[in-house]
Image (cartoon, rainbow, N blue to C red):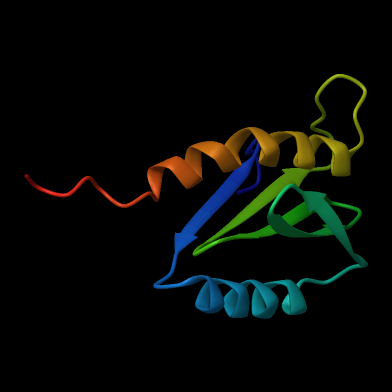
Length: 105
């Protein structure tokens, strides 16, 4: 949305292959130059545009999309570094939330 500080979208799939396929599709339709980023075991693609920066992440059976308007920054970090920093903080919580529930006993 227009005045958002940060948009985050998290989606879960039946398996990692389905998530990766959707992640590739989503990344392919984003306008702007693409580059891969390192996020531990997750795969990321960063797209930087004049109006915003988008980080698309595939992490196991989940995909995450972070959209940061260009004026928003953490300290003196670039848009790319800001999104990577945020993603690295969010990924463990998403992975923990997606874990299988304990077996009923």
